[in-house]
Image 1 (cartoon, helix red, strand yellow):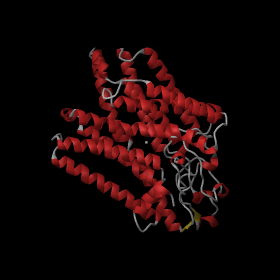
Image 2 (cartoon, one colour):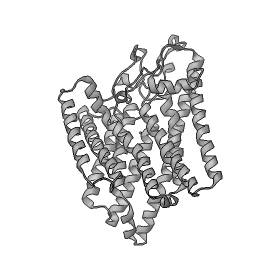
Image 3 (cartoon, helix red, strand yellow):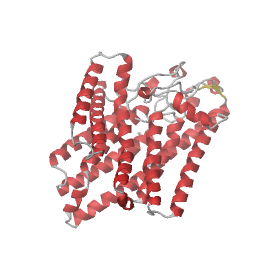
Image 4 (cartoon, helix red, strand yellow):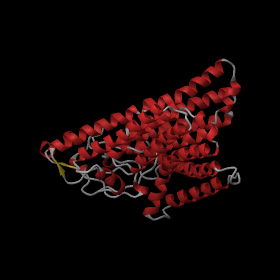
Length: 412
């Protein structure tokens, strides 16, 4: 599945007490009350205390102070939050630590299917360039890819603030592979050089700024400028993309994008000049993250709408592509659930069900895939969902697996 807020402070990085991190915190940095900050969509999984068992004195290790999430509003889902409350035994802490490590590995493994999703297009473009068939690259929709690139950069910022390294790697992979395609299009003349130059500047700036922010070496003013840029860009693009999906059933117009641009500029200006209340500032700060998440969530809607209008084209979809998208997003769900990141869970879950699986269902209904393929995909998906929800509830010591979902939605 942007952030207009202050850069992450050391005391706000303790999202996951079991995540290895170069920063060491003392027991004094553990909040005595639930943290309530605001998040930016550019960083969906944060964390990381060096390891409470190492950061705390021995006498404190017997009862590690954990804290479950208090209810978090949509505009605050990006804020680093402590997970648990009350006291845990050493055995419970070990169980949570093991599950934390495993979910991080699942998230990192998602890079494999996401990489496989991008490579075919890059290889095909390279073959066409080498053979002199530059006209073939004109069919690649670079404007649509540019929208996806903006979403990747926004989510990269979101995960950088949350200090979620594996998720940062996924978004960085998306940015780099998309930029490689842009470079190929520019060589073929399919993408105007001025647009490519501007895109190059944005990509380079975004990568440098986000990784400097992750390392906590970025000046605050630069970070705020980048957050404002992502917020305005994401909020302007989303309504225009949604509007364009239904053309020609509605008039072709850039008015939705213009209205959104003006509204975003006004909102950012009011937030930066202190003219908005605290809740308003948090809302503006969350816009980039949520707009990027909603942008990616809209992609399945657009595809399903196209399937509805042109059912004969469904067989043109690649079942392997849909399966890879399902697997990649599915592997990130356990991590999102474990750290109680509703925005990340919603975006990835939506992609799993309405992009990967829903299109596999469409292919099956139109005889685009075999019954065996559909049964295996269905059984694998719902078995995976059941497994990680059960495993999460067991790690937290809940009697019912539904308690993990309840905490994700409403807090403890």
